Length: 78
Image (cartoon, rainbow, N blue to C red; front, top):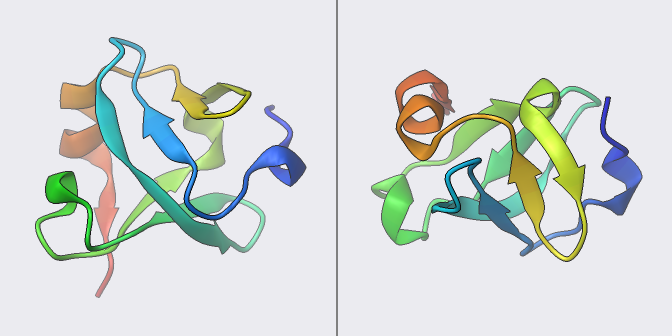
């Protein structure tokens, strides 16, 4: 599993296909990343993605799923 300690607020989240899918708001517990709601991809809502989708972290958070699958499967905040 990816090292979540390298994830920082405002890091760009990039899908496996190279597409931007969001920006980190913060880690939610030890198993989810909460994405900002003001990102154009967010539609005004916070979304959660599991840390299990992380491929690696450098200056960005890189996911192991395509942008289409990420946006289909992410969880919208209540």
